[in-house]
Length: 146
Image 1 (tube, rainbow, N blue to C red):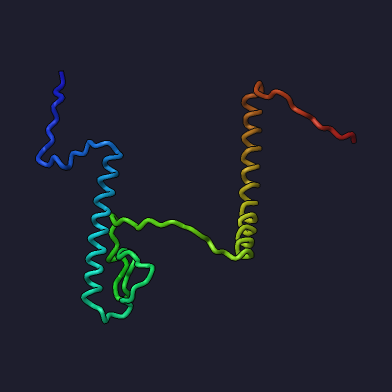
Image 2: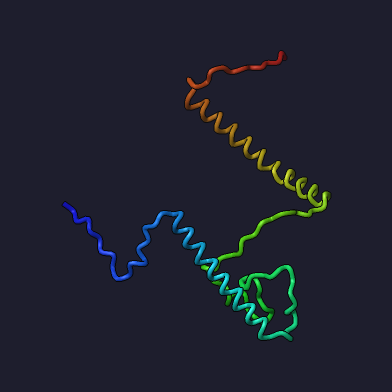
């Protein structure tokens, strides 16, 4: 009989056998803690440099991961494990004629795709008709007199 005792190794914390909801809750708490610490350090830095340009309070405070100073290279800051801030789209303000022009372009671009789709479906129908003639239930022949 096979041994069912598995060695957990030295790091028991790496062995995560929690249900998905508990893992999500734990990750959510950890994320909130990191965000709180980042806000505290950001407010501490702003308090230390009151004469800095652009230190006025505004209703929108971008996350530090979104702010890239002009003298800093974006590629150097790229972190593949970085989390993006949550966003909710509440309103889209697009002028009517711009939207109409976009949809007209989309319709014109869709015409070749529809023609190609029609040709593919017709070809598949012909192949089915050739290889499986017993599947053909009825065929309507239209003839015009000469």
